[in-house]
Image (cartoon, rainbow, N blue to C red; front, side, top):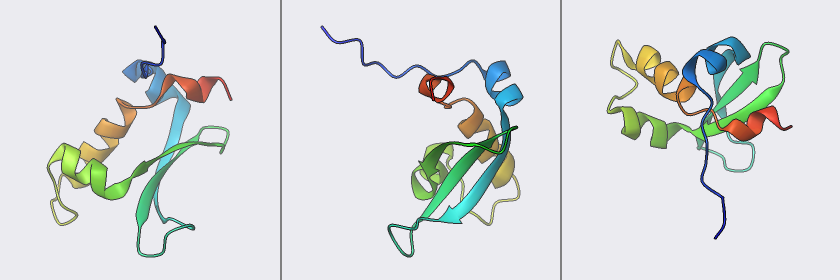
Length: 85
């Protein structure tokens, strides 16, 4: 049996590691947006599909609370493998 289950960093650890969550255009796919996560050392840690995150948190861009909800979601879903690279 494989131990491939994705592990997320504890929220407090993610908060201390993440400096920015930047909405960007996917360079491989025009008209597709991603959320790139950067560390306090300005290192790219991982990225999330913008539309998937918006659906997961149940908001759209026009919602006043969208940024806060998206930030909360991303910080709770930083994969543990970011510490390995």
